Image 1 (cartoon, rainbow, N blue to C red):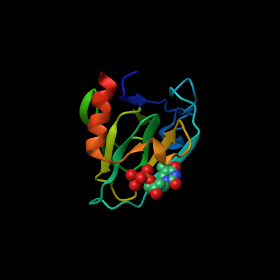
Image 2: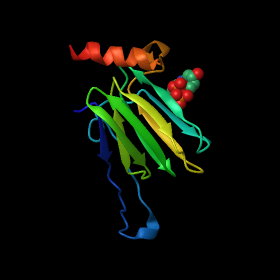
Image 3: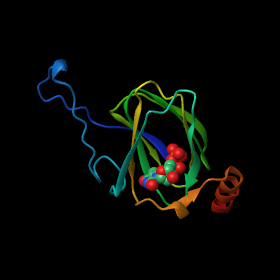
Image 4: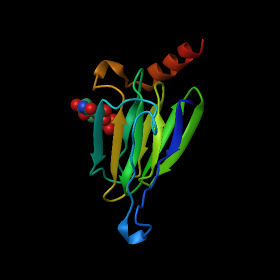
Length: 140
Ligand code: TYD
């Protein structure tokens, strides 16, 4: 699996009636490549604010915008990309070695994050120059 990729989850509507709404199940290993040890969500972020600006050494995550929209910038050994998340049936897999920045949060945006490990500050790379050195070293 590449270091980041967009995943499309199922949207179940068992009544075959749009008014009934949808149910999206996320179960390991069927829908995602890791077992979930932690869940957190980000909300209340103003549209002119940026969050993230760090990478992880071991952590795997799935980012799902369950309400509203948010822009995600990713940079890894595979290159740079921007993804707008605005669909609760899509998840952005972000593996280790990805610098991420979240911005342009819409009003009411809720970004749900599924994580493979418990919170561990020593897994973070918070300095961009250190991140660039880290991924160059990994490539050797
Ligand atoms: P951080 O991961 O730096 O988020 P962001 O880049 O969006 O600001 O986390 C913000 C704060 O929350 C930081 O003090 C660490 C704390 N935190 C936890 O205590 N547990 C967690 O699971 C996470 C993700 C963060």
